[in-house]
Amino acid sequence: MVTPQTPRVTRHFEEELEHLKRRLLVMAGAVEEQVRRVVQSLVDRDHDLAQQVLNGDDPINRLQIEIDERCFRLLALYQPVATDLRMVVSSVKINSELERVGDFAVNIAEATLRYLDQPAVKPLIDIPRMGDIAQKMLRDSLNAFVTQDVALAQEVLERDDALDRLKDQVFRELLSFMLANSRLTESALDLILTSRHLERVGDHATNIAEEAIFIVSGRDVRHHGLDGGATE
Amino acid sequence: MVTPQTPRVTRHFEEELEHLKRRLLVMAGAVEEQVRRVVQSLVDRDHDLAQQVLNGDDPINRLQIEIDERCFRLLALYQPVATDLRMVVSSVKINSELERVGDFAVNIAEATLRYLDQPAVKPLIDIPRMGDIAQKMLRDSLNAFVTQDVALAQEVLERDDALDRLKDQVFRELLSFMLANSRLTESALDLILTSRHLERVGDHATNIAEEAIFIVSGRDVRHHGLDGGATE
Image (cartoon, rainbow over the protein chains, first blue to last red):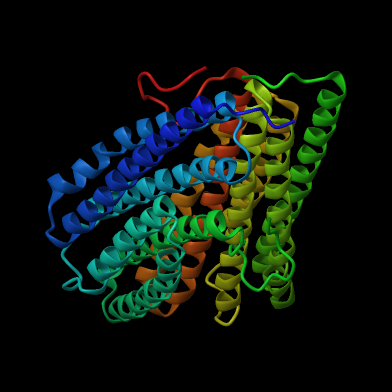
């Protein structure tokens, strides 16, 4: 039941797949920039920049719809099989992951705008560090997917632990601030929420890295420790 | 480039698609039960039940992998087009949404086990209410997808506001407890996190409902207020 593929059709598919990957990289770049900006706005106490992040979500949502449509067109027109099919379906999933990271940037911008109305709890050290790690995880996971680089994808998975540890550290530190001074409760809560959002950005990068590994090795690493599982 | 479909092939595809939908309903039922149990464990202060929720995540992860493979097989063997193609790709997405809801149940179970080590902050009223709404949203969004019921999907979207309002209410109330009594800070934080996880369960149900609407009407309702956007 495999559609006979003429060389010409194959070439068109390859070209469209390359175009799809480039659009995913554009989407990832836009989302990463949102994360960078929102952490910057929090550190610099910059209302305008936080507001720009809120306004920056619409273009990302438009990109998501465009990329989704591109995937459907590829599936419907070329009816790819095997690895090509997996590439396109993984692109649909990765597109959703990226759009959600965009939503977290918006959530952080909202927490930031609330936080900036209050006195600062403390100089921020771990949260910008989390932001840097999360951004790099995003970038590398996408590059791993596009260039089919399993080693890079594996590195992304390992960095997730660092993010988790920082999140726990932020939590403990802010809890002690809250216990010592209840006037800081609301501000500290917004920082705790921000660190959790950044941790979730890392989770989405992890999901993308897992798709990259799946594509190349046909090995499902999503649920470590599950016996059986699905491979090709 | 459309593969000629014999009646026999079409019948097999229809049967497999029906089977896929049934498996998605099983997955949704399992996830909904996890949400039900975890809220119950929090309300009843039941350690064992919270522990059962932690143990209940593996079967859900296995189901996710099985359903994913089923979708790939359908795409590769039958190369569906138009609405059939959208049904299968939407199933891939919905499968991811459900798996994530399962992860939230685990997050709540972890918060619950911490919470149960401390004295109760207050009798819980709004959180079980949030749990009920989130469960119903999940069930109805899946039914809307499987039976292609746009009106039901629309109802799910509307219920999301109720969940958001309850989450804000929980937050304000617990904040005032924390401000009044700093010994309650840690426990109150776990309840705040729980209410946020439940709100996110509702968000995932909303995503599923949006897929249901998209399938039937070809109308993309994911990003309200975006001009243009993608329709068929």
